[in-house]
Amino acid sequence: MSKRIRRHRRGGFTLMEILLVLAILVVLGSLVTVGYVKIKQNADIDATKTQIRMFEGAVGMYRLDVGKYPSGDQGLQALRLQPPDAPTNKWRGPYLEIDVPMDPWGNAYQYQEITDTLNQPSFEVMSNGPDGANGTNDDIRLEK
Image (cartoon, one colour):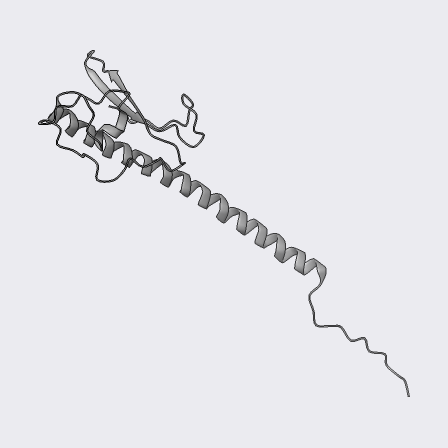
């Protein structure tokens, strides 16, 4: 009688199979994360532009009622609280129903009085963007 020696193989996964599966999961996870980050950045920029348009509309209504734009010192708060120099019988605010929100990155919106290309008084509302620094490439302004 010959005895056959049988080797029994365990039914588990090899180290190579486990590493391969982990590598695939890491690649898929990074693709999803990169896509999410880009979508989130675009959504924040779109939300900022929408809020700036809302402020521009409210400032336009303020100007129609009061006869001038809020000063740079008063800023967007003039849309919520009557400034001391605004005539009581003309100011019909508040022009915003809620407090002036922060931009999506937690920074205050910037308001300034400017003159337009025809040398007429105007204004600009902007966000300093994701980096929070003024004058960089990621600042968000709307063309007029």
